[in-house]
Amino acid sequence: MTNDPIIIKWPVFPDDKLVVKPLINYNMTKKLTLLLLLTGTLLSCQTNAVNQNEKKNQELIKTYFNLFNKHKWKEMADLYSEVAEVKDPSLGQALVKQGREQIAKHYSDLQQTFPNLKDEIVNIYPSGDKHMIVEFISSGKAADGTQFSLPICVIFTIENGKIVKDFSYYDNFQ
Image (tube, rainbow, N blue to C red; front, side, top):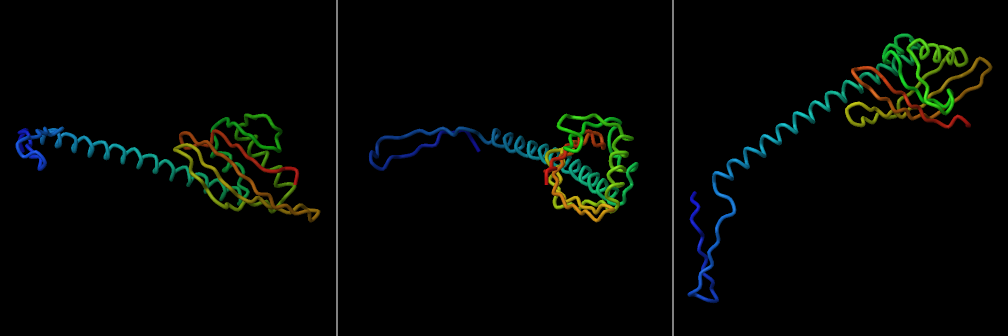
């Protein structure tokens, strides 16, 4: 390919000529193509890394609910960072910082009231590389026969493979 001008004859005015020069030449086309390929490759790698992180976080959350349903509170609490930020209507409206022992005790106490406590995941919604939103139904039956079934939504923030924030939302006035 050359950079020679392209001459177009106008049919209306046979003696006049319009000269059109190409905006990009062949070498520029090659460079742009290479640049687009490299950009696509880099974006693909970044997307793949995010997807891998989402998969790891999703597995962590599935492990969390599996341990919850087995009432393995210490092992479940070990999925949290040393101190995690927790929002839960049962703890009041303020943000509470809890250590692993406090988290395990909270659920152990809840199990004392509802011995067959269990959670059933409805859906997990990954949200970026460090947030997981989980929709689930928590249910149980008290010793006096009182039963509950409560839809809950929780937003987990995960950093370095540990839960650092656990923000639960539900209607505790049912």
